[in-house]
Amino acid sequence: MQKSLSVLLVSAVILTGCGESRLNPKNWFGRGRSVPVAESAGDVNPLIPSKGRLQRRDPGYQGRLVGEIKSLVIEQVPGGAIARVTGVSDVQGPYEVKLIALNDGKPVNGVLSYELRALTASRITGGTERSRSLTAAVYVTNQNLSGVREIRITGARNAQSSRRR
View 1 (cartoon, rainbow, N blue to C red):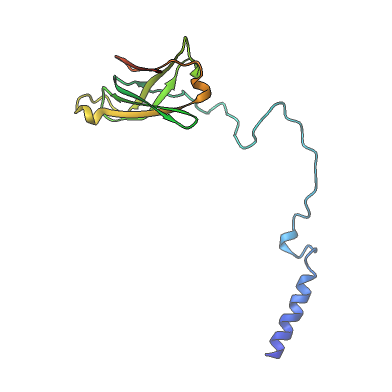
View 2: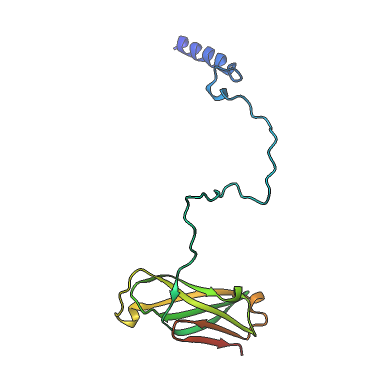
């Protein structure tokens, strides 16, 4: 017992002396040092890869207008309002439903306009109205609501609007 303890103690003392030597596998690359970096021409995020020539171009959101807008409800919340709209699609299985702001989200003549769009995987029409219904909402801040008298949501065949009181 005493022999193994003394061997362990001696080996621990010897190994602590190897901390800065080349025998220590953690020191194979040496210490870090500062090197100058070439200046970049702009505000570039190094975590986002640059696009290559063989990469596909992003086509953007390819949603189609929802067939009919059934209801529009504006709910007042702290700091703004939530516009919640329900629509009925012409085809079964719409997904990724979005309210797309028109005019870059700026009101035109006091009217803030959106389009209700959805992606569709199939061209299967029919089914019950309930199976084709969808809901989307958008939060509008008080800053964006300043100067707005009406919010208008447009579909393929109709539009719903709500005016301020």
